[in-house]
Length: 171
Image (cartoon, rainbow, N blue to C red; front, side, top):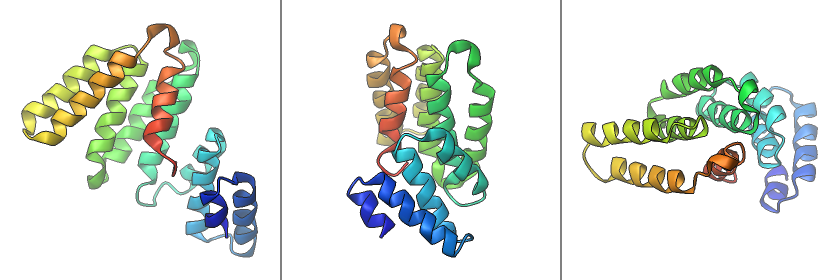
């Protein structure tokens, strides 16, 4: 039922159905994950992050944590940003072997959010040199598009929008 509400974009009803499910069985990991996803999709990033952090040992969750931390940091004033926290989350996500592409893009996005587009470009250019083929070139092209859209006057807004778009509807 919760999944259906989510597909219909009815986040509050989805969350209520998940709460009901978790009341009946608080250890239901699938419902906990879906609740965290629904919170993130509904823009309740802090709550979603807290939920995901409780599930950090589940596959794919470290990457979700890193994405949410990037969004939160990019939305904060420069003085309140904690990039070490994001970097640590990215390192943890990188430990999962199937996350290499996403981690690389998040690292590049983090560098863009920090106002370091050259460092982001260099990082992806190095990936192209290490792994010839289409995938690294596509990453570099994607970063080029992101950097071209990057407006230093809106640095706090652009990375969040880009980060949310990268998350997709699931996170």
